[in-house]
Image 1: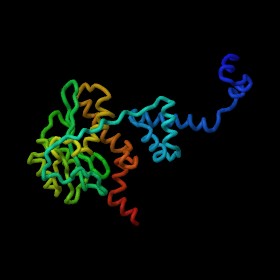
Image 2: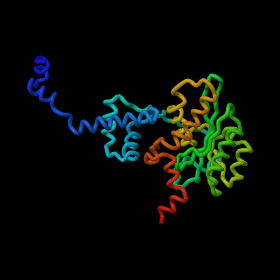
Image 3: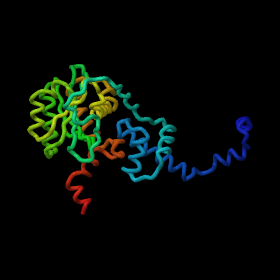
Image 4: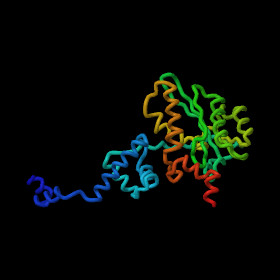
Length: 278
């Protein structure tokens, strides 16, 4: 002990006074916050970084603290979120006259723009295909379908779920890529019969459906790539639970000022807007 004190340049009396000093209120609060951070991180399935954890503390739990403090406490505790998606590389493609979006995805009202796409993931039994429809305003998945094959029925079922859930007014846009499932007669007829307008992005350019690609990338990182899937049923159940329980209801979205898609969606329903206006 004498050698340690000499090397550190402190007196033995000062060292023992430090050892006997009670824990400060600041340190107690930091330990308490670290415990909450750990609970939030576990509840997020280990996906949240410091920004979303800070949003959950300040917005969800009403606990005032800085994002810098959250970052420091997470670093000290060895807690970290999952890495974000890689940037999408710009690819040259052939523009079509049917692109009604032109990469302008931001919308202020629900049902103005829906984007849709298909993703796939392997299991030991074979691939699982998932089609989803996302509202560009609230980023909520409003329709989805899962099957062992990707055909027009898959995308029509996802769109039908969205239409039945939202019952949109005429004039909204449904934006997709040029996959044969989306350019099929049955899919475009489903769009038009609901009074909506079909839109198709540039051929071979992921940026023209970047909002949907962003969702797939999040699901890939936060769910699909985190384990090996044995059966199609196991993966289908996991996708259902990710979309309906975690993503829509609990996952805080950076583009929504860290609100959840479901809360953001509910705040913009006619009933909520009427209450706010009164």
